[in-house]
Amino acid sequence: MGFPETMRVRILHHDRCFDGACSAALFGSYVRHSLAPRAEIAFRGLLHRANQLFDERDFDGDLNAIVDFKYSPSKRVSWWFDHHQSAFLSPEDEENYRNDRSGTKFFDPGYRSCTKFIADILSSRFSFDCSHMSDLIHWADILDGAQYESARAAIEMKEPALQLNLVIESADPNATGSIIPLLEREPLNAIVRRPEIASQFERLFEAHLRTIDTIRERTVCRNGVVFFDLVGTGLRGYNKFVPYFLHPDSVYTVSLLDGGFRAKVSVGSNPWAPQPPDRNLAELCERYGGGGHPRVGAISFPPDAFGTARSAAMEIVEMLSSS
Ligand SMILES: [Mn+2]
Image (cartoon, rainbow, N blue to C red; front, side, top):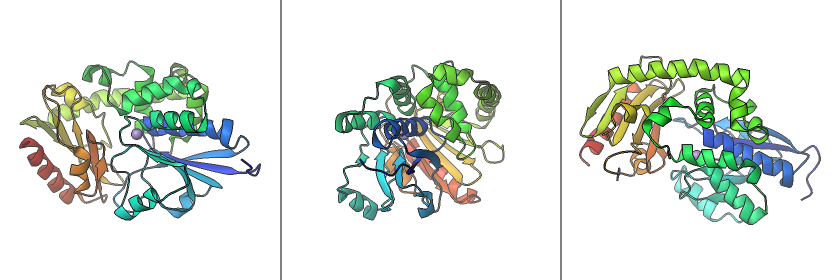
């Protein structure tokens, strides 16, 4: 393909997400090796929020790609990959995607990870050999698909991929841009041994252990549904498997927290539940303007709308308790 030598490629990815970072690294590798070898590549993280998700000015590359995040009908976006069930902000966006004939926009909610989805598309349709990133593809599929052997393994974080996941999930918005290029060049165990990553992990892991105690103190578990409210604790997030480590017999978790730029209700299900969860959590969250996957979803409310968020959380607890 004939692109100018000074071409700029902007890759927008789900921020603070291991699968989003791996998806960006894999697509970046394709750009560098096949699509536009001389292009200058820049990454930008995208987060779910209560108001507008996209700003047209974010699409400032000569070529713009979105990976592991919602669809944008913008004419400036030429590549898109997503596997979230709630990929479309509106029926109009979905219609726009269905009518797209570019051949470079892809959606399959059947995939556990967007990284694996991109790898399969790039190898089958664009003859791109993804084997140099097979370890990353493997781990993105395990992490995004919650395929750990146990809740204990998930929270002990002995594997390098789990350690890097903690660093990425806790990063400041748009701060993973320095980690993504490493994902293509270095094995995961080398990345987590880098002093700047290792020191972040140590600090975050200490905080993670304290978070387990905070959640333990604030948790109510009734009819298989775990609920906790972290507003006022200063916690901006938590490892989503902590509730199942604390309550192995639970089926669902509903939580409320102050995410800074949003009041966030998270709804999850226990991958190791004694009886498999049967409620579609993406659909449940969509009723409140949120979304996600069948097994895990979230709703973003405006930053100070804790009352509204708490009411929604309690309604969801009731619905899940009676199922
Ligand atoms: Mn994903």
